[in-house]
Length: 121
Length: 115
Image 1 (cartoon, rainbow over the protein chains, first blue to last red):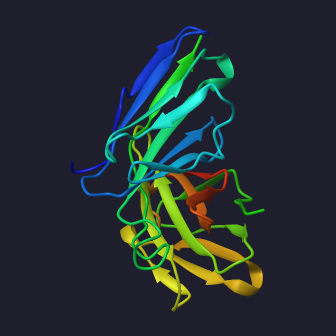
Image 2: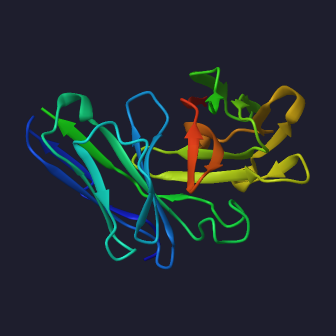
Image 3: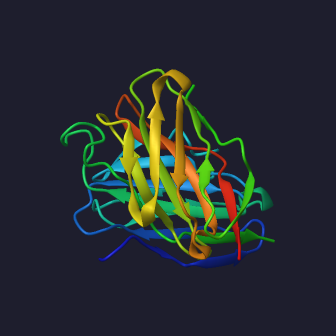
């Protein structure tokens, strides 16, 4: 697609419910990232995929959070048994090349979607 | 650990005035530095980046930034601010370690532009 697409744009859920957030990266982009942005803060890294492989999940706060990218394109971030502290903006980014590219960052500009605003009541 | 500090939470300038947003980073290796802008309801848009070479980099919308290794800084500047520049600005450092790559962001600076 023309840009990174995230859905839904807004999600309101009750505490204890599971939510799934979707990210559709720019066509052809190898790498995909999830970030979480609390109010008044900068985005914080959650997890990183290179193709379908989850290379780094060190930023996932606990085991209620998981992510997948089964076919190396669309990714889903799932939060189980949501809590009020999970309320935040969840941002997805994609980039053209991973570590196999020309230098780690030469083509690795991250393009961000508009985000999903999650509110847990 | 890698970190980015943006000392100014909120800056107000008049339209037409010059602007400088401060950014300091902490990173042990050669830094790859970025400035992103976030407008309401929009995603993060890349303004400019520094990978290597000339320490003064030009970006979109008339912005520029200067990398100063001795001061661990990457300040964003614009000679004359327009009302449409009102937004939140984030400085970030690119971190590549092991099999992972990620951006570490500062907390952002919100810019208000007075007419």
